[in-house]
Image (cartoon, rainbow over all chains, first blue to last red; front, side, top):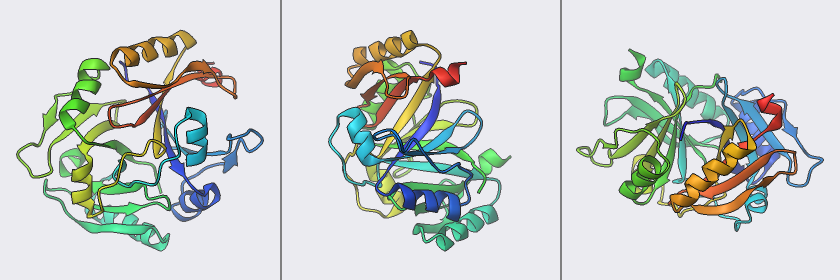
Amino acid sequence: MESRITVITLGVDDLEASLRFYRDELGFATPGIVGEGIEHGAVVFIDLQPGLRLALWPRSSIAHDTGLPLGTASSTELTLGHNVDAKDEVDAIMEVARSARATIVKEAGTTSWGGYSGYFRDPDGHLWEIVWNPEWSG
Amino acid sequence: MESRITVITLGVDDLEASLRFYRDELGFATPGIVGEGIEHGAVVFIDLQPGLRLALWPRSSIAHDTGLPLGTASSTELTLGHNVDAKDEVDAIMEVARSARATIVKEAGTTSWGGYSGYFRDPDGHLWEIVWNPEWSG
């Protein structure tokens, strides 16, 4: 199976609050909520790298679209690893997250494998790890 | 904040079972489990597109690394959208998933927005949506 992941969709409880966090606080560019005219269509898309988008979509819409029961927030389901080129970039982004009133889950520090990272959670509990990996930075 | 997502990490309960599903059944290339010599280090990396990797990591390790309580599986936390160029490619991948004994959550069909998609879940309940989007295919 060839990899063709084009959208990472995060389930959210309050789409407007999630939009404010990602757009207004973290500073990701997005046209905002689209699809409001369609039942369970309201969604926020954020362009990440070329070919990859982040979508914010109500958990209730994921449940409706899949026919699955609505699950509860669970922070150990996934982490999004955001890689930067230097330790001080990790620190800088963690400060942005702190200013955005994200939950700082783990302050930036040296990892067991020789990198440097910190974790925060978005308003819905989704984990972001901001990480500097010396092997990737060259 | 510039987008630099390089790793999507999925929390799993049984790393070997998850490896078998992704490598042996779905056919993703991976060197297998690495980092077993480090406490909570055992992880599976799968190269996706250039610059993006999927990681399979025990939920217990995510809990340990972040200091958060171990959460339960919750399928409405995220979906991974895998985009293909034609409807029959959606059907073909759904058949691969079925053969892999994935849980078929929603059979492939026409979506409300004019696309064609189906959903399956991996052994840990993580949702994949296999989708053909006529607006993306050109």
